[in-house]
Image 1 (spheres, rainbow, N blue to C red):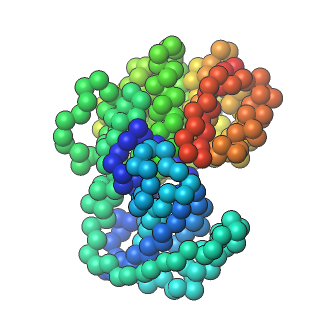
Image 2: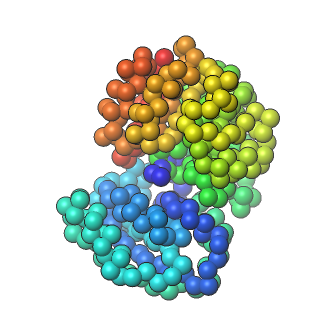
Length: 321
């Protein structure tokens, strides 16, 4: 899955792969690939199915939150056995050919005795975004008193808040909080539960957090307990909008869906059907070039654009019914 903060050091690391890095192997191999920011996501995703963990961080750039396409980043791939150079090269070549660029160089080395829990925590520094301060359980320092704290340990679920898609949703929630009060909310594709928790802390009302992935539901249950919003947030497993639970609790005056562009388009009629009259929808997980497709699908259902938030190549839409 693809995923922004105001600032969180210059080491912008994103863990994309969830093939359970906490299952320790005797040895770990690291493949490092320097690549321009414009291409980092494409190259990272092609290795998701064969890696223990994937992270990337900025090597050279402007040092600001909004990275430029030519900024140099380092893509890091972790394996539990020595990867074949031919395999790495062939996968890189597929993306490079598609993008019409040269195949990037790479280097693989043996890394021993990695503590994956510590590694993951170190790659998730705390940061502020909108009305929220996001951190993991290893952070024990002072938290800004004017921001809602969100303690998130994603585990194998998507969503620590770092990626543009999630952070733009947090910015959208912060923006809506200035004008709107919601009473019955839905987080479609809740992942770690970070957005459901943000909604609960902002409006102190009922939030229904659903995901097709059972591990995400389990992670959300743990995180809502940690954040003390378990009386407000109800996690449930659901295949999209196709569940009695969703139908029985509709309509919702706020629906947040941070998934991908094509599922957003597919779900547009169901979202409209479950959104209360005068309700608001936050749609994220789409590239800016996919905005027209997603927006048109929802306009056909009677929704209109209120506001958009853009970060790097990503767009988040705020729509009204």
